[in-house]
Length: 81
Image (cartoon, rainbow, N blue to C red; front, side):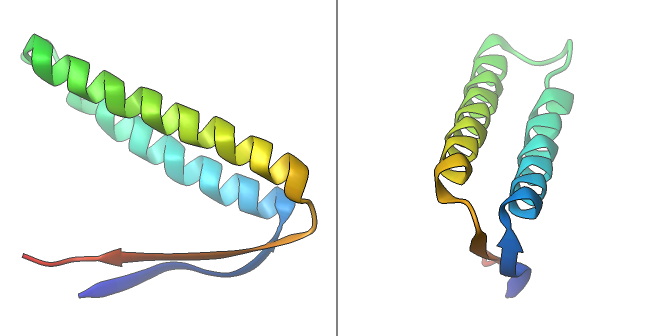
């Protein structure tokens, strides 16, 4: 099963807003999964994922600063079992 999440051309400001919000949702998900019951390895794994997402967002911001104009975004989720 596939879910078309984002498809289209966006100006730089809108593209930045969309991607920023999506990455923030992923970061929030991992933050919420860290609890008092989490073991050290699970916490470290989630912290690593959060740092990776933050780096991706920073890289995207730099890309958008150099790109300007319109940007095409295609994002699809592929589900399988």
